[in-house]
Amino acid sequence: MKVKQTLAHAGAWLKRVPLKYVFLSGFLVIVGVYAALYLPNKSVLFSYSGTTCVKHVLLFPGLYKRDGADYSAYATGEVKVGGFSLASTGLCFEPQKAPKPGVSTVAVAPFGGVFGKKNFAIGVPNSVSVNARVFDKPIPISKSLAIELSDTDKIFSYSLVMDGRETACNAEEKQLKCEVQTLGLDQGKPYNLELSRSFKSEEEKLTEKQVMTLSATKVTDSSVKGGETVYSKPKTVNFTFDKKITKVNASLVRVEGDSRTPLTAEAKVTDAGIEITAAEDLPRSADYEVKIDSVEAEDGSGLEDVYTLPFKMSGGPKVTGISVGKTGVPVGATAVITFDQAISEGQDIGKVVSLGGGATIAGKKENQILVSLAKVPKCGDFSIELNNDLQSKYDIGGNSAWKFGSRMLCHTVGTIGVSSKGRPINAYYFGNGPRTVLFTGAIHGNEVSTKLLMDRWIQDLEANARAIPADKSVVVVPQINPDGVASGSRTNARNIDLNRNFGTSDWRKDITDVNNRPFPGGGGENPMSEPEVNAIAGLASRLRPAVILSYHSIGGILAANQAGASNSLANQYSQLSGYRNTTGQTSDTFEYAVSGTADDWYAERLGVASILIELGSHTSPQFERNQKAMWAMVNS
Image (tube, rainbow, N blue to C red; front, side, top):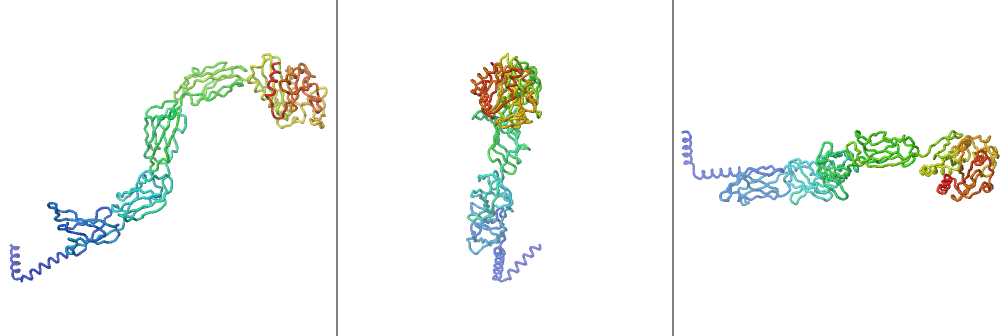
């Protein structure tokens, strides 16, 4: 009722107001509404992370044009009839140039005119900033590089350049992802880096510095070593690295010459590194290779190059050596056979080893079989043979067939006396016959070639002991004067010429040396006063040899003591050796006075034939020159 009354009063009032005032009032209302709608600038906040839009109603939006070079505008929320846009509810703005912090004005009006013109003030905040701390540490080359942004940026395009090689960077949720892996960089190397962003043709350089790429990931250890022969039965090979691994690509192959056959195997990452496991037991006595094509470490680094690990699976136990030689094995010794791997603890060795000549099994341990030679006689032959059934500690066999034959030592060693300084004077005994041939050397210590000759002669006799006639024995004394040999002196440690000390009819205390100079007391205080002389004299007295060969140097001659068959033997030795025979020609044999010699003592006191041989050198044993002659003395 009150509303009707109010309207009725208003209508009555308007009838009383002049018409011109009514039009004026309407005009003023329209002007006020226009001013309120179009004159003030409308604020718009620019967004880097999405579209920049504002709610604003436009009638017939297709008629509107924008004014402003920095931004373009387009209507949203359009209402269309028959394809014709009647109205829109929003307006969005797109930058035409790189956005600059501050305020930019954009005007929108029908037909671009003045009427209905609306100004929009676009406020642009500070540009999105880049956190460049990621470049302070080495960067990965095998995966995308993540760079933090202060905000999401869908306006600019970003790119990374390293030493002239460029890659794009995608902006995602306050982060740039730069595809560094496409640049083909090397690990552990320095590069000049530039990070830039651009909008259309405008570009801005954000960061410029030198960076290092991450060092390569390295294998630090493996359960199987490169080139190793594996004796156990592993299916898995483990690898450790200097970094935590997240991905691996690897394979296992069998190697046969230049051929490689892939095997079914699984490669996986573990807490300790990686492991590669074969689907089945690997065949024995074959070569293999693990190939790690690539890995990715937790920090993004990888291998510097493809990593390969060659190894071999063993066969059964194989003999690698024996502790004794083919001849000269000491009587009572134990032969130790060594294998390339540990042998079975439970296997009956007696079913694997066959022995001959008196050898017996003494036991086994780890990778060895012990054979006792205690029952093999002096100079006796023995044999050891293994069949193919010996098992390793991992029950692997088939590689143990082996034969060995040898001979025990054919000589014995005895000490016939000691020197002035207590050094032993040793004799080496060969053969078992009743007739003895005695060889002696180094009665003068500076005539070292004679000792060397005796050492070679002992080796030859040992190697050819079976060539010694059954009725013969051979005794060798390498050095009668060990003190002189040790000091390089002709005399013994008491300064006595031992070959002037024998109790012959011409023995003298005071003698001359090899240069015919007086040598007072050089023959000894008394004949046979020296222990070395008594040692060799005692041996000769006990043996009563068929012949004694006394070696000296350096005349290159020989002479018999003219006892027994010495003359004929000297002729034979001379012919075979080429040394001149000066028997009976004392002045031609020695250019200085001699007395109290061993060879004269052998003749006067024992009646034993003796030959003095002067080698042609103080240092060379001249073994090849003497060898035939020495064997001739044994066989005479």
